[in-house]
Amino acid sequence: MWNSFNTASPQGMTAGPVKIAGANGDQVTAYVAQPTGNGPFPGVVVIHHLPGWDEFYQEFSRRLANHGYVAICPDLYSRVGNGTPDEIATKVRAEGGVPDDQVLGDARGAMQWLKSQPNASGKVGIIGSCSGGRHAYMVACREPGFNAVVDLWGGGVVQEPNPKQPVAPIDMTKDLQAPLLGLFGNDDQRPSPADVNKHEEELKKQGKKYEFHRYDGAGHGFFYYDRAAYRQEQAMDGWGKVFTFFDANLKK
Image (cartoon, rainbow, N blue to C red; front, side, top):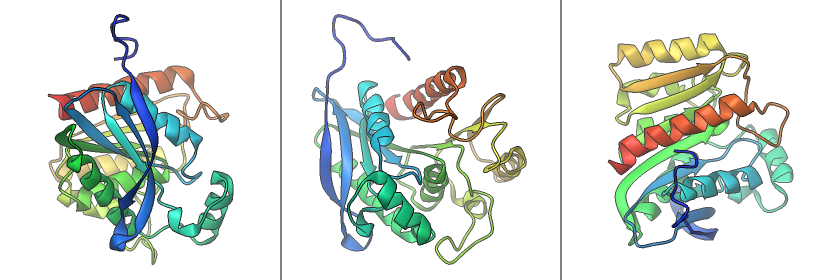
């Protein structure tokens, strides 16, 4: 886990943008971070949050690569145009977000890109936080090609449908085939502890394999070290749980 590498051979990596085929065959930019070496390496599709395809998610991807995963983070907002992450996220918020079907197509394209690489092991996980946590769960329920899914405080798993999100992800639970890890702050309001309870009840009802961890003293976005929401102790414990979960389901 954290700091478990041998100092004689620290992990190297390469990172940078690529183009992938997303929803409807659109060319979508994605950020890829991958370990050096021949592998084979498991892959992880990284779904960014509504603050955008930002520097935090570049570093998020590199952290996964440093632990032996090929990570790809597609820019779900690439069709909106270019600018700073804040400028693009403002436009996306004004438009009410991006459609679930489009997110599914982009995530599926990212998964297929990972599986096509010569250093791929064939196993792929998906992870996201905030709106990306909701998206990761939604995609895993609709796409059977994933081997593990991590929902980091995904707001809106339990919600009323709208035109861009016509089905609440909780109502897709019966179709989930991959094991699920969920991390949540007990001071969060989206999802609230009551929302997390509803989600857990549905997972139990459908007989799904999952583990939820809830943190006192943490609210929404407690991994975000660039924001006041950051909680160091809870975040580092959470990262440990992410790596333990992915290692168990993608490396073994």
